[in-house]
Length: 316
Ligand code: SF4
Image 1: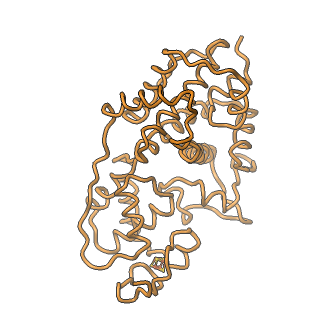
Image 2 (image 1 turned 90 degrees about the vertical axis):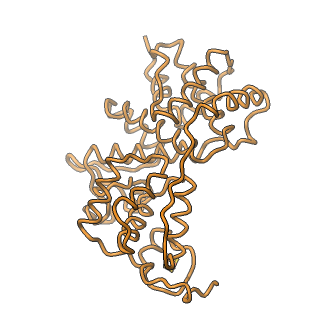
């Protein structure tokens, strides 16, 4: 009979509960564990899928947690932001599959661990505005303009709530990957060998750049540079950059090309989002708004990035 508490750890190995559990155990790394961890990393980065090796029964659940821990160390040893971001996306999608079928008690336990304080209101869920800003994904249906804000809280359907949990998991997995230098000495050689072995098998990011003529506002330039380095942008960063690109005259294809550098790029979803922005012809958020999103990087002397002209920049 599977212990439900331990089963929770195996489904959600990024939680503090799982971490506390596994750190109380003596870890034995077998060749089988190493091979499974290597496969987990390869499949996550290449196909966006975390493979299932284990039917969850008591004796193997612990092994699942160890495979997760070793996979994270291998990702860190790869030392590549693009791989780290892709790996985090796949782990969050794996967790989402369990969340969709999860019971209320476990959901409550999970969101508490993730510090997402949803409140139930009938068939809806309320999330404080600040939490929403940090954890909402980049699709148009999550744009603030499409959301109901009341008493400082955003109203969400169950499926939107689950998507936000997924996004929070993605952020946590990526942010908590161990630093390469912090991989414990006892595993270091094995982990580095695994990283060396699988690195040639992984897809390399292909940077697609689009030519710009004229001046680009510093905040938007930084977002472009981040994308060209295959970093994941926040919801507000994507939204603001997509509007900006549209407003300065970039075509749908050019915008898609730029966003194709994102580690979680999905052509169909992004195309829909970009078409939505173009069809609604949203106004570019002002510098004041961008400051509230944390996207302003310097007082460059204008009030809206669209109006930016280099000679205004007091910092040059
Ligand atoms: S002042 Fe405006 S244009 Fe300049 S960096 Fe800040 S948000 Fe961007």
